[in-house]
Amino acid sequence: MQSAFSTLDWVVFASYFIMLAVTSAILSRTKINSSRDYFLSPNTMPMFAVAISVLATSQSAATFLGAPEYSYVHDFTFIGFYFSALLAVIFVAYILVPKYYEMKAVTVYELLEDRYGESAKKQAGVMFLIGRLLASGARLYIGSLAISMILFSDILFFHVALSILVLMFGALAYTYFGGVRSIILSDVIQSITYIGAGVAVLVYLYTSLEHIEIIKTLNEHSKLNFLDTSFEGSFSIFTLLGGWFLLNIAAFGLDQDMTQRVLACRDKKEAAKSLIVSILLTIPVVLLFLAIGSLLYLFYMQSSVTQSFEGEKITIFMYYILNEMPEGLRGLVTVGAIAAALSSTNSVLGAMASVAVEDLYRPWRLKQGKVEEQHFVKASRFAVLLFALLLSLMAMVSYFWQRHGDLSLINFALGVMAFAYTGLLGVYFSAIFTSRGNEKSVLWGLFGGFATVLALQPYTFGFEIGFSWQMVIGTTAAFLIVQTGEAKNE
Image (cartoon, rainbow, N blue to C red; front, side):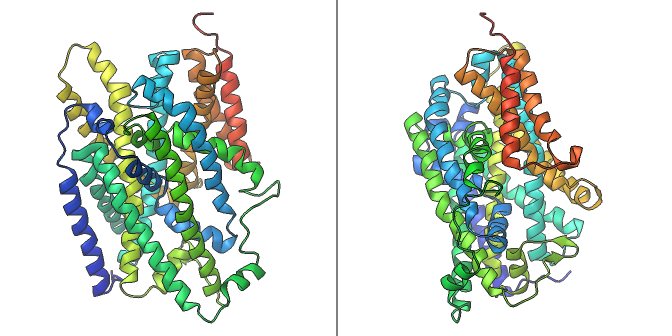
């Protein structure tokens, strides 16, 4: 193994990890008296810090590398997804968030307990945990694969596994001791890191294209389109107001991974602001990485590029990092990718632990008899360690499945959480807007939404339908199934 890193790259890399060690030690000095303190800090987090944390959680190494790929191949229409997200978070901020705060909820699934009973909360919690384990494990694998390529110049299992462990230990450094407070404040640091790396790349690329009329050339090649008015486009205005709108409601309002930090705000008004501000901050960040992709299109316009690394298809940004990136900047982009991966990994550890402890373990344990609150603090930290292990194992399984399985694990695992979203959307819409449904119909609704979207995948029955429309159909199916159940008081 011969690393592509220069001495300067290693200095940048080492400096970043020294910063991680120092900041994690500082942020971990938090007195935790209850599991609520551990998971919600206890409702003392500043609005702006929460907004940046939501931004960081919504981005990942996959986004860091994937957004430039979209604008390189297509144009800027992907940004429409985040304008759809803005509409969705307005709905979440003023419809769902007030209900969560009125209940003083620790997890979003407590709303279902209030409406349908304890088993409904548990069912939604279990679906979240399974979906998150698969989806976040796959994302962890994607991030570690990128780091192995850059750091070790190969994708041998040992080096990918080492990259997985580096990311997981970095996430644990913040999550284990300090809980959600450390997660939110560390997300601010990680956001500054990967946005800074993106800005540095954009400036470097721009200066290397000084002899090209950038705007004129991009416009001539139809690369500056921001709005797709076609009916079949992936991010057309119709899909943005349909399936993508539903997906964003679920991601920002029904997924504990995203909403946990929103529930840590002082009150519902601050929480609502944090969601809206997070999207307003995310839009320019995504535009930054889309701009990188468009400049890469110009950079390689006259070249023949094979986007492959040891048989693994790679994005154009990764190709650029591996083949063109100068000393120092390569190290900065590497820590940027690590920061993007860390910000999504540490958040999911806290989210999964909160659901496992508050929705599943605590109700069971209290039925066995009275117990001190410190018991649940210890259980919360144990749950963080347990899910760190499970996510790492899932990421390692992804390595082998991706190479030897007929079904792409990455496509399946990344989509699983979205499959689960349709069931959750149907159930929550029933709970909020109707008086129908019961514990039994909720269970079938969760399963029905998931099964409907799974049945619409091309690898199931061989026909294809746009993912946005899958969300609409799956949510409708779940909603109708829940509606078949009569309310208890009927």
